[in-house]
Length: 84
Image 1 (cartoon, one colour):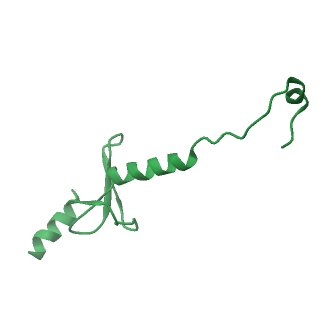
Image 2 (cartoon, helix red, strand yellow; image 1 turned 90 degrees about the vertical axis):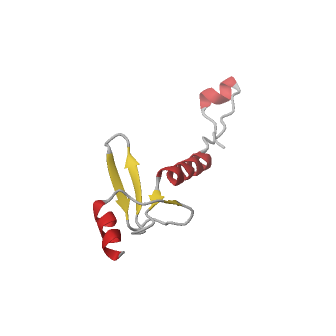
Image 3 (tube, rainbow, N blue to C red; image 1 turned 90 degrees about the horizontal axis):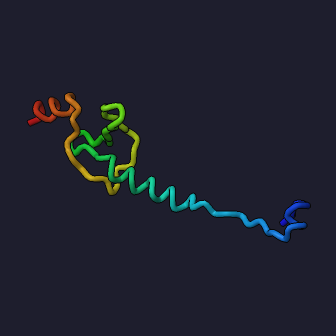
């Protein structure tokens, strides 16, 4: 490791600090598992954004391990009624 002139004069050593990027990524993944659900009828993933007050739908999102519940999409509810 290369030290600068001032660091060498003061006798300080600089260490590379790990800011926990791995832990942060794991935290974000767990948070996404809590917020994103899978529709039990149309198999789309969806989440509700409290800031914009809108639902977001994902058709290419992995569904493994997600909680299943019916989505509020009107086309999903009508298609389920038509099929039965």
